[in-house]
View 1 (tube, rainbow, N blue to C red):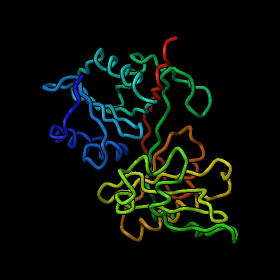
View 2 (view 1 turned 120 degrees about the vertical axis):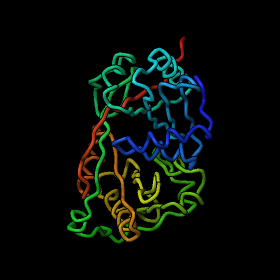
View 3 (view 1 turned 45 degrees about the vertical axis):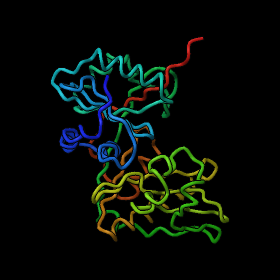
Length: 277
């Protein structure tokens, strides 16, 4: 396997333009917005490229009609030994059956969340923002006097302690705030929800939302996401939403915010290979 240098990314930029689903995370690596990595099986005539975002989201791109499956299997196994766990989308989607066999993927994972040590195939759902549908919704407002909606600060960027945090998607607070920022929902002065720009490329901004576990189910995610969507609409930016279909809360929130489901695709969870005793 070879790690592709940024100077070799030009061909991948063209390939990404043909991907029919949201891959802003991969574009952010190719455009060097973040310090991800890109691997290929052969520097001169690669049959595939694997784009890895620092957060653990990855995209496998076939660059040939005959992907080197042996090299791909060896590469994925190596990734699983050296990372905390990855998520992998693929293009084109007709590779899915071959990838299922190659990785011995569990096609019916138990429960809505990834679990176990086997590769699992979930489903990634993409959505299209419908401005007219969003405009027809009742405006979101804080439900009580102890709930505050405010813009995220550099301090929020550094301190909000949840797994889906903007600091995992940007180099620093200055970059984050300059490329979209986000909104906090605070209760009694404590930030409990963030809705933030996880990726921003051109006129598109992908929304990330996370609520502290003990504060879920109270409408805070919808409140924060609405504020970020309003910001996008006012600025002429298209809000983008994608999630695992098995993540029912995120899927239903997208629908409640005026998004419509579009393309779905295979979404592989590649857990870390446990150490041998």
